[in-house]
Image (cartoon, rainbow, N blue to C red; front, side):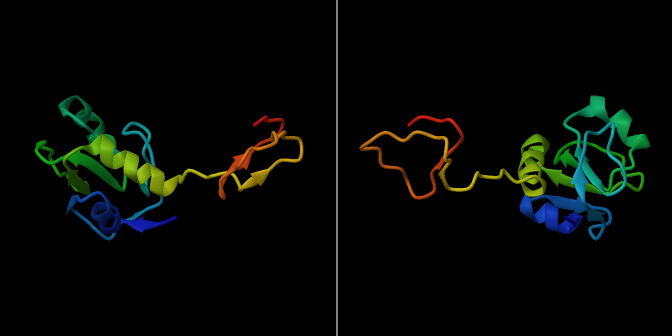
Amino acid sequence: MNFSVKELAERVSGRVEGDSTRPVNGLASVVSAGPGQLTYVVGTRYLRFLAESKAAAILVPSDLDVPANGLTLIRVANPEFAFSILLELFHPHRRPAAGVHASAIVGPGVTLGLRTSVGPYAGV
């Protein structure tokens, strides 16, 4: 999936500083983020990693003094929380298909919900 920095900033109520059109296709740690990936920092002790960063964009606290140096920043209230929201966007939780596996045992009188999934060898 590809998103622009602007699209991601809108999802986390962030403010972009830099190139809002840059494409982002994944997430990574501040140490390993490469081109096309978004990362985050939460405090001054991580700023040293930004000098070498190849990340497409970096989530930073709204009040953190970050030298731009050509970086694209997304300023947010809580970078860790914003990163978790975007993590779900890039890697959505997949629900198992509804139904009862052939090896599962469902007792008499059991009522299952419409979207219930009962896996292999389960007993209900």
